[in-house]
Amino acid sequence: MNDDEPTWGEPPLGEWVAQLLAERWEIPPDDKLRVDMDTKGGGVEAVLTSGSTEIEISVTYRSGAHDRDPWMVLVDALDALFGQLEESGRDHRALPTGEGVSFGGAEFLVNVEKRVPELQRLADRLLNDN
Image 1 (cartoon, rainbow, N blue to C red):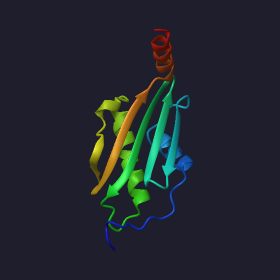
Image 2: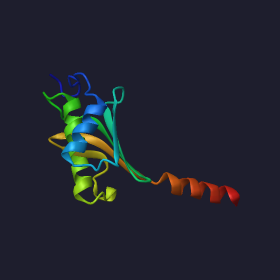
Image 3: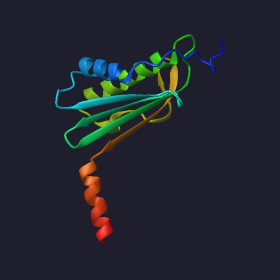
Image 4: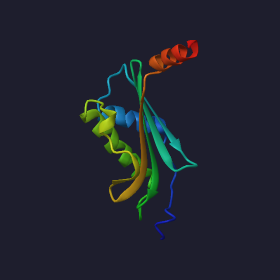
């Protein structure tokens, strides 16, 4: 098998991945975690909403799955990143980002973003008033 063309199985259900992550990392019941699988782009995205803050972690597979299903490699990488987020007190800047993030011998593109929609709306309104 050529590593450039990994064998992709069926993607896991995002709801199941979210539930497993929430249990594993003891996410408080008031927080919400959503996980979506990007079947066309070969990636996974998790959005953790806590109060008025959202933290989004997106992981796109690049290479290195070898004989493993890239979906499982992606979920393992997401689990590791999510764990690092939780262990850092949700400091999203502590996570590795960009092209070439390695985990378990595989390479990924990782993007992490923190949003506060209420502040964004306020800033937009203030900018539009000027």
